[in-house]
Length: 295
Image (cartoon, rainbow, N blue to C red; front, top):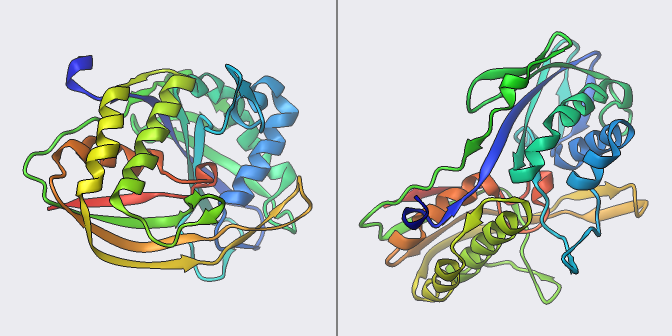
């Protein structure tokens, strides 16, 4: 019931498996590479789907639309480059949120186009092996066939805990949060909660579902009373090439761990949700993935 949970977000979690057609040398972090090739293929196959999921600068109710209804979960970073032999598997995840799930069939067709476009600067060919809904463990695509039953949506869990006094937040992919144009090099608990709650409010207002705005605003104020007790963060330097701007762009962000202490009970559902939704900038590339551990 609505009064028992502070938000409700539907989503569709996809696990995508590709098979390398030859030995391929790819960037260590594939978020930007995957987003680019999927976008090109989607643009060719379904402009409506591309516009809804990808198009930058979209206006919604007179405001600039910055939140997107999807994110890509790339393979873990492995050294400076990833070398994949012929016949080896490359796996990554894609999450569709709310109304974005309506375009899953077109997105699945776009995955098939990766073989023609190729991955990386040398466009190494990868064929689509399968697409699976990892929540229901049902195939969505295999052997050239699309299975609509695999497109069943799930609801993001909303779990509460009592007596939580500490939380460790591990940054699994670079976290990019800017303030007045500058990339933050430290993350207070209030900054963390502000980003989480604002992201959930934006996703639900733009793509369906709902969130308790009053609770979100209250938590942003309460977060000021939670203190940082340990911070082991570093700035991870990354670059990506922008086809639109025809130049390399800074893509770095914070990695490491930070631990907070205080009365954390009211924040638990939002922190758990952020593990799935990510936070900060460039979440569509898989940035801002976190893992939380409570005491």
